[in-house]
Image 1 (cartoon, one colour):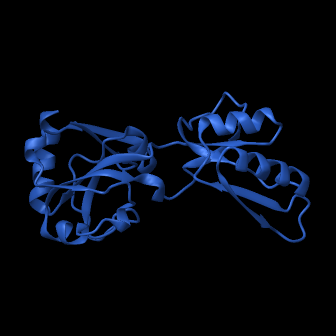
Image 2: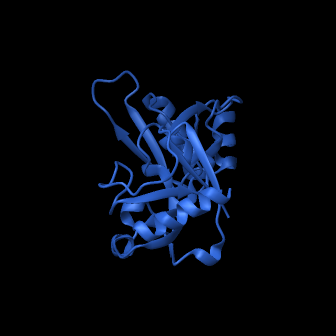
Image 3: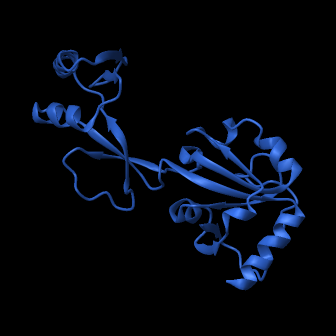
Length: 208
């Protein structure tokens, strides 16, 4: 399994941090990701390693949750070892990982992962039109009015818009924004917790 670690430091070997950094939630450990895009968020220098799954001590399925919401992770990190956290939601990365683009846009810059659609604020006339068509589609629109704004109506639906819904609304002239991410919606995080795991990591680095 290929894993990636982003850093802005020059070093010869990994060292266990004395205290957690801003993205290390439960203890001093070293964090790798199955996504190069996620690793690049933490630093411009990307270290790429290959690790056999046979060395994983514990696997936890995050089920699409953020790192802070994964139960038992604190205890696992404190116990030490090589921990695999699958299906982790990386939306809790600090910084702007998501950006809105007009529906008809074709150039998404470095934002390459689609994550849904957003209906921006609009006038009452446009909001009524949008709500009517959402009802026809079998969706349940909710409208929130903001005071003292030129386009004060914000509308959203349950469930969220699909590609087909967005295409139909856009064809009616209703403004639709496409939400794009720089990092994938979910990834696998490999955590090296404890000095023994970091020693193993440095030996792995020497063999690459």
